[in-house]
Image 1 (cartoon, rainbow, N blue to C red):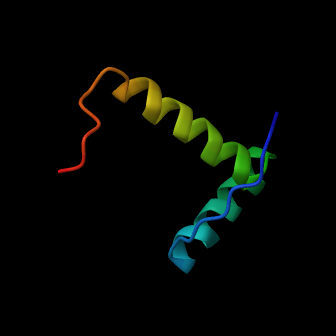
Image 2: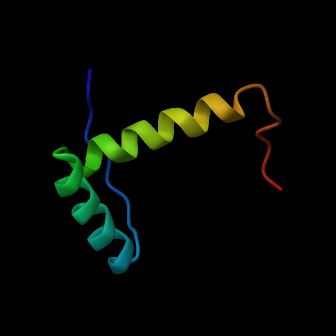
Length: 51
């Protein structure tokens, strides 16, 4: 199930993400979801306590 998630980014990052999404014929949310999945997989098992 997909759920809406709102966050804030610098305007320049949003612009670059939108351009990249157009080039990839996808949408920004799919790019961010893919990156989040990769990040979480890479960091699984690591100490997640705040520094």
